[in-house]
Length: 384
Image (cartoon, rainbow, N blue to C red):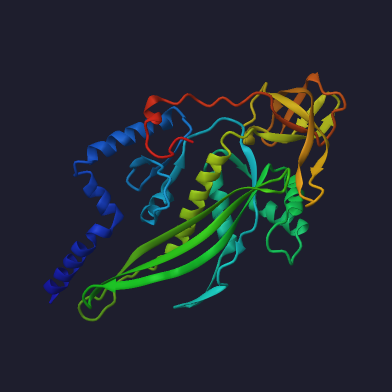
């Protein structure tokens, strides 16, 4: 009897072998394409070492490959291993607002109702943006406190006015939020195998729209609709004599949300890559001017900052839409000391009438590290 049980186990393993990612990756090393994959890995390692602007995938076995900007759900698992090269320049400050749920409120599952975890999705998006290494992401608890104070309880989506007010309080340049459009934690389920050894695969699918807004105008700058479908196998075995072996419950819906958040973070980083860091004067004491960016935001010693005085806000009279701020350059500051959350600067030129609330930005365009030839030849949108 025990031989039959082992035969069933081996047969099931052979049946599932082609579907397991780790086994597939291991077999890939024996295929003719293994040499090409190793060459691609070496190319990515060169880009990582030289800190080129690049995003790449890293799998569980240490394999590296450039990002392929694709909506093909067959590649969703790759997005769980999204990585970014290091970045030393000033980091744009972002806030992540509450996630809006426009999908069904709940779905009946085997264990009762499954709610859409909007707080968890907000946290995953926050982590994904932070992991790009390009942004200074405001603490989620602080964002919630300010949003609760600035937003009406009966309003679902943030208005331009609330975006401007929240952004000013947080000192952020941009605010991001997600909208859940589809939420299917149990898209499909199937099982296979003999009675004493069974394997089942559960799939989940989610669709989330991510929106990037400009704090200066309250308007939407960029949106991207992301979809991901993820599945995992679970196994159970009945031992001879009727005993039940160990089984594992998987949560593919969590992986699907992570894949969507990583896709959005990648595209937001790509969209903002050429935008200057901007901040403001938060305090003035004698000759010291305090700016709301320090070492945590990538501020560098001796950096030159242009000072922009806010003359007023420009509105469209017909629609009432805020179009932006009317800014006038009044001089230049030079950073003399850096703390984790702020910098101290002194006037280098002009700045007559300087006051708290005036805007500052880098006086020169940030210089990106040189792109090695190996990085320029990578396929897809790998180089940010």
